Length: 357
Image (tube, rainbow, N blue to C red; front, side, top):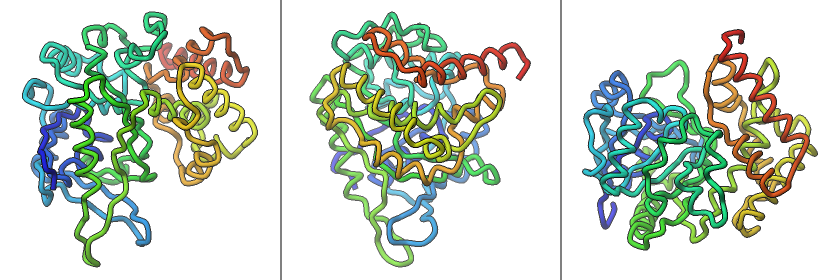
């Protein structure tokens, strides 16, 4: 149970339900902002998060109706960010251009609510905190860069969404299954007060012991708050090596195959992105070794969400690949394999927008 209880507004009920469950387990209150049918289902039946636990067979299921903290859901017009201690951004970047999420970001900016991004695509607002970075040159990477203009960089931080999870297609919308139970890695806020809130949440999640029929167990997926601004950027090498290389000219493949189909090329791309992060200011210890990622990727048997979206005809997806590409060009870095990744995603998007996919 948390020594201090926080109220957290989470935009996005799919991946967001994993964070909401961890918060509620620790005695905090979480409100998931989602579509009306999702909100109705969650408020009536709660959420179910299923995750593997080391040393146990099968999955442990966590029912949000039985947790110390309150977990509920609402639509965008039913909440005010000013009523919350923290707002978490757990949707994919293109979704924020819709009127509802856009309005909540504007309201959070006006109320000066600290925001925690759990997107693969870092908000332009967060990147403004990296010394020497020209964020205006990155506007073309965003579906609508103007969404982020009013937000204060000092009130924005980034969490690396390392845990992998998906909604099982045969289940209801309130079910989420964790496939890779790693930790959320957070950069600090500029304010020590806001960082202290993250550390309070970190400690309260660490203290959770979950009751099962075999006794209390320690659950995976923790929050880890780091002193370095650059720790969440470790995800970039994983995304470019695995997630975006799932995308082929006219097909998609699992992350596992993207990484292990040609391990040497995977290592080359991974190390190149890590080198870029060091050029931006990261220390080598902020980053993840290729071997650790490659081992984790063996268990990722599905195509990435960006690959699945493109294959389903999406006209906009998160462009972390393009972001990395532009940042590298600014520093005189270039890799043919990365040029090819970006060109392939560009081509898939052009086809989808033309209605020929």
